[in-house]
Amino acid sequence: MNNAPITLGIIGGSGVYQFEGLSHVETLELDTPFGRPSSPVVIGSIAGKRVAFLARHGIGHFISPSEVNYRANIYAFKALGVNRIVSISACGSLRDDYAPGDIVVPDQLVDFTRLRARSFFGEGLVAHIGVADPFCSDLSAKLLSAVNQAGAVAHRGGTLITIEGPRFSTRAESNLFRSWGMSIIGMTACPEAFLAREAQMCYATMAHVTDYDVWHVSEEAVSVDMVLRTLLKNTAAAQKAVVNLVKGLFDTEPDCSCAHTLESAIITAPGHIPPETRQKLALLVEKTIQP
Image (tube, rainbow, N blue to C red; front, side, top):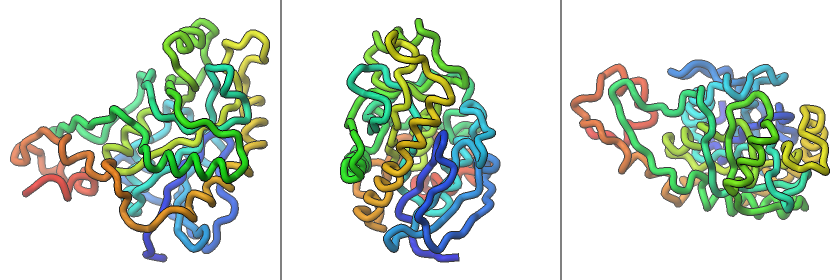
């Protein structure tokens, strides 16, 4: 196995189950203290730099948004030494100027989910992480530049609301979210973004607008067929954007606050942490908690 650092981790959402253009490919079946990831992790090279790819919903899309093992996915990337993650996701637009086919790099996030394991912490180890700005601003800026270079219509900023799913919204819900000032809607950013922050990893989202949800009375209501058709059209742009991003990244540690999240988050006194919990979370906390 190649031991060179992995520059970027890519999580593929609906319609993105593999990543073309990788060379020197190897596939890893991993396990974690939180179970198995959604799919094998594929590691390969782009422009001479190593990247890791994981299909969020499994190969063939058999895992519902509520059933994704988000903790295992993030932990697996952390175990491989990944320190930057880009999520490729489908989303619905809640505003006129974000049209189907556009790509959004959001800067804010609202969690409207209810059924998911939201944190690595618990079982005797308490941490309160800061997520005022849930997406890494540095990685998001680089991602937006890469999307623009790929020739796609791109937007920087906006709030992504994550609903539980797997159903789409009612018209009343969609209009409610619009009245709250939400920009786009999806089903998978939460708790994924928060877990990445707990793992002290940079995280940004490349959200592909596939529809106008159900609020737009002059447009067809969202359907699976609509989502997949738009994603298929956007696949080339997404892959070009990732290649552009990787070319501009360095293999060194990111120079931002994401890598220091736990320094001010863990509140449990070291002597009160159960040994089994400390062992389970050693990959995440060993550099932060003193003996």
